[in-house]
Length: 235
Image 1 (tube, rainbow, N blue to C red):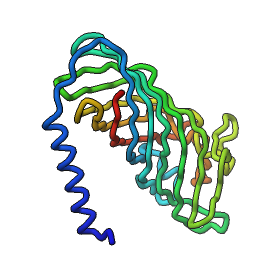
Image 2 (tube, helix red, strand yellow; image 1 turned 60 degrees about the horizontal axis):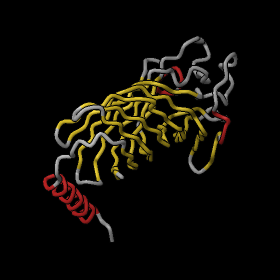
Image 3 (cartoon, rainbow, N blue to C red; image 1 turned 180 degrees about the vertical axis):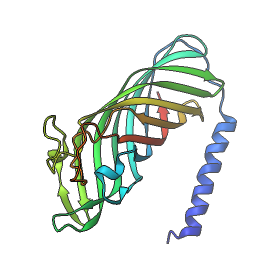
């Protein structure tokens, strides 16, 4: 049985294995050739902004655990500098407190699925460490609110639309954009560990149903944050 002690042992063994790979890895050599890599792993997403309490009851929007997978193309320019292009599939979300049709507060899970494009990022490599930074653009594919075992709003019902900011189905904007930074550690010739942070700069709930019915807003300041930790395979 996988109890807490066994889980700790497995985690420690995994961490030691990664450390061993990193210590034994050779510094990547400069070839000037394009290279591909795929990445998948764990992500944690959350919302930030001064208007969280305007959208959600009790001002609660706790982070939630999610996942991502993606493909990136690396273009070295010199031994240290280069460019990177990437596309990811992501599940994001949060744990929310919403008011149901019976005016009861309900703990609700928001799951939203995005295709995210990093059209270009500048990279800098120092030995086995590579830093990358650049803009990202995300398109919402599907979103679902789950309260208990019931789906409150599903599929495309959470898409936002202009000129209709108080409809109960209109929670999310279709487009998110912002800035992404990535730190990559080369573990071996083919494997690398990546840690990324995405800072959303587009208001995610501009078309949200606000529960403060005594007032309205033309701009709702709620934005997305995402942290990602993944393992990459380099071709």
